[in-house]
Image (cartoon, rainbow, N blue to C red):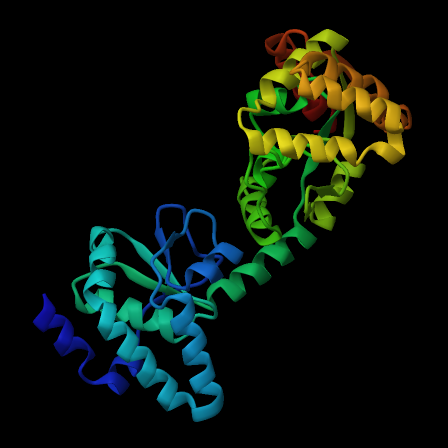
Amino acid sequence: MEKKIDDIIEDREHFLSSKIPSVSIAELDHDSIVIDVRTPEEYDNGHIPGAINIPLFNDEQRTIIGKIYKHQGKKNAINQGYDYVEQNLNNFINQLVPYMNDKVVIYCARGGMRSGSVTHLLMKLGGSNVLQLVGGYKFYRQHVLHFFETFSIKCIVLNGRTGTGKTEIINQLDHSIDLEGLAQHRGSLFGFIGRKPRNQKTFEGLLYNEINKNFDHVFIEGESNKIGKVFIPKGLFEKMQKGVNILVTAPLEQRVQRILNDYRFDNEEQYTQIYQVIQSLKISLGKKKVDYLCDCLANNDLPDLVRTLLIEYYDPLYDHKIDNKEYALEVCSSNIFEAKKSLEKFKFRLKNRNE
């Protein structure tokens, strides 16, 4: 294998100029193994959902190549890039070998030298169905952003107080989108605790995959335009605002128990984070109530902590939003299965009425 690799990359200029097969974003199908050959930092900043990161260069090497390109020109940068590739080539190839017999799509930042050289390399090593993604991640991002400006969908929006089980119902329904799950943030002040919130590009990529399933009507939870640090794309948020509203209700003690089940805190760091969030509520609730909440936390009286937060903070906050909407249906979520059936029947009637 090593001799074959050496023969392939011996003529660097020919290696780069060889014609390779490609595929556009619109032609990309779900059966392909998508490989992102950008650096780990580029990948973490945003990537095509499901893409496997097999970096051609590490972050430091990419920075050095960029500086050489800026100060010494393209040719020197290319040669430095090949020097790095040759240093780690066997390890790089070993990571690619498992996908040799699959339909593989390779992409980099702009569909340039990195993805082109890896595509060519795989073909030379015997890959029978290897394609380069035209325009790379840059074109993918443009495609996703354009999609959110032009797509068509009708939203059935689940509204309700905190703890009424809206997310649980969403995850039981077909043709639904769990925005909080995609964002990895529960949407509340405490929503980041125990999760790894996603950035905007990753959130939009995952959301694009969900909406792009040709749904005509979709169940979705009512949210503000921001979940944690990510924003719901304007096109979707406008459709949510114009959607059919459903009110989900549940008794207080059931809401308390749901929240305790959903928010499981089991280490000192998480308790510190809870304490810090509670302290941030002094302006809203006053020092006396915040001190009481801190006492509940210190004594591990989580049910009363949650109950007090619901009554004193969350319910007044959300009731204003709830009262300003008209609802086509009210559903009690004491029994999630029954709530799901009611919503499915409602959707069936709604579609038939609109057809």
